[in-house]
Image (cartoon, rainbow, N blue to C red; front, side, top):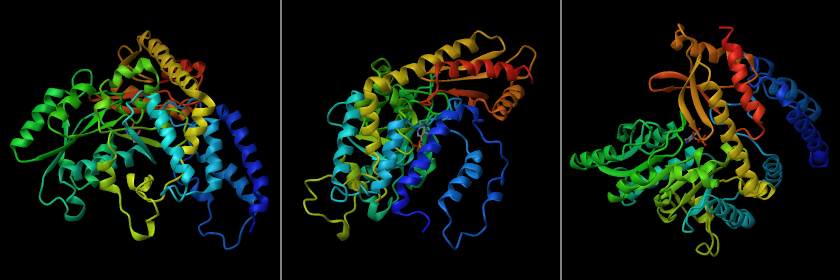
Amino acid sequence: MSADVDDFARWSAAATAWSDNYLATLRDRPVRPNVVVGDVAAKLPQLPPEHGEPMDDILRDFDSIIVPGMTHWQHPGFFAYFPTSAAVPAMIAEQLATTLCAQTMLWQTSPAATELEQRVVDWLRHALDLPGHFKGVLHDTATTATFSAVLTMRERALDWQGLTAGLGGKRLRIYASDQVHSSIDKAVRLSGIGQDNLVKIAVGDDLGMDANALQAAISGDLAAGYTPAGVIVCVGGTAVGAIDPVRDVIKVAKAHDLYIHVDAAWAGNAMICNEFRHLWAGAEGADSIIFNPYKWLGAVSDCSVQFLADPTPQVRTLGLRPDYLVTQGDDEVTNFNEWTIPLGRRFRALKLWFLLRAYGLNGLRAVIRNQVAWIRELEAKFDADANFTVTSRAQLALFSFRYTPAGGDADKLTPKLLEKINRDGRIYLTQTNHNGQFVIRVSNGSFHTTREDVLGVYGTVREIAKTL
Ligand SMILES: Cc1ncc(COP(=O)(O)O)c(C=O)c1O
């Protein structure tokens, strides 16, 4: 053994020193690594070591082989996808949770973890100003949480016969706008309902679902013999931040007794701020709401919160209690594995507890408010420059643009500009297709990004554009 319990303090101190230096010097690294496919693999032995190696060597190789091949998600120049970052209290809590190495599947296997999960999720419910009847649970990712909700939609529509008998020839339908994340498509595919039965409802000019079109689709499906099962409401689409008219969509869904799931994986974080809550007004009418504190609150991936107006349908769908999981007093305690897909569950509540206590809601609100304000300032700079066209307005901390110089071919120049920006390494941006056009997204949400970093995006983009 090269590293046992006696060595723990030494290696842990070495890892902490490395992490400290990494965070302090992150700005000096390119956001994306300067590697081509196979570079890292070529430095790794083909076969596993037969004998243990010194931890010094392992840490050295981590620093020299792995880190230079990483994209740096904590980098202040990371404006791609939806940023994911780690606030320091959450990082420390993750280290402690790893030391405990607890499975939080049953109350009995980790009583404090279960009770802490109930409490911090309820703190978050309070922070989002959702009504007290919502009970919450932590999943790894939004994908798994949405899958759980779609399975619940399926079973509720089949009166819980699907779990044993399959779909029984019933043709279920799920409804969502075309702005939803691909995790919704994945959930419907994997649930056995089938992609063809995910009905994508048209959106209006504001990119929100047209509630009248939803009503028409449901009525048409009923007339054609389908069984409508649920609606997925988009609050903050991944492409450009689309938001459905939540209240109107929920009204239609409720009129048909459909199960309602709100995907607010990204935008839900902003709902800790009073001034953004109008964006999802009516969400309290949903059956299930998810958001990812790992996306925008510094909670370290993975960590997705699901609020359930009534947990019973989901527990009925996902819960199984084989003999070896039976514990005394099962009916008095919450065994969270019955609310989620995996049996084994990491102790994710600890990082939320550390984070919420260390920052307080006001501290976290300040992070979100700053990031939204700075992205609006940045959007204004692009607006004022005739060489660029803002293609989607800032929705919270996300907007998109194209490079449209007079006489230039924006369809060719915009992808070329993005490619060059990302090779440059100072910032990292990604693209999407918006209204049939290639556009560049600027998505702000990294915990360590300052106003100067955000406003600096304009200078970097303009400088690189001039070289095309
Ligand atoms: C709106 C939305 N929903 C769901 C997801 C999937 O999240 P996860 O990676 O946690 O499964 C994403 C990911 O970016 C997203 O933007």
